[in-house]
Length: 140
Image 1: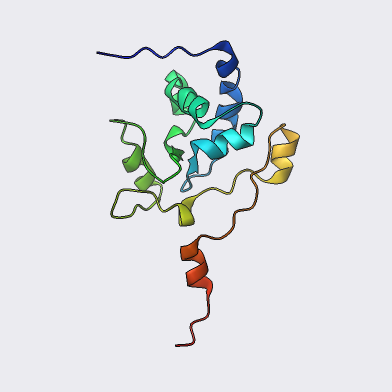
Image 2: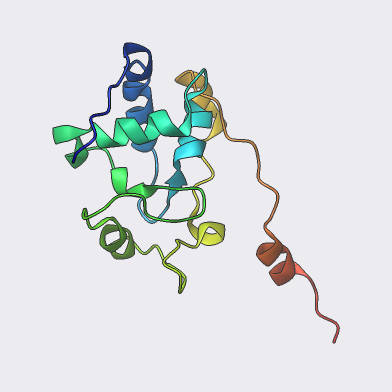
């Protein structure tokens, strides 16, 4: 039994802006559905970003959809070789199959590009516990 998803016109109005942001994610980096939604702004949310990625059609050849993953570093698509495409770009995964976000997460577009195109730059992230541990001087 298949489920039909209805995309409203309000949701669809975000799609072009979502694609424009995803096109900025460099090879070897990943971003999350939520991060893309924050950059797009307005009432865009992670679910709308997911709908946009699922509605790419022939644009999938231009928009690097494989670089958009869930907030825990997991692959949300089924059967599209997303992980293999990311590994080919140099993205590494842990033993649970999660992308190493602390190393490969895109910080978002630079502020100048974002402002010029009407987007919101991502706020600076605090270092993760793992990053903090690695940066601390060990005395013993």
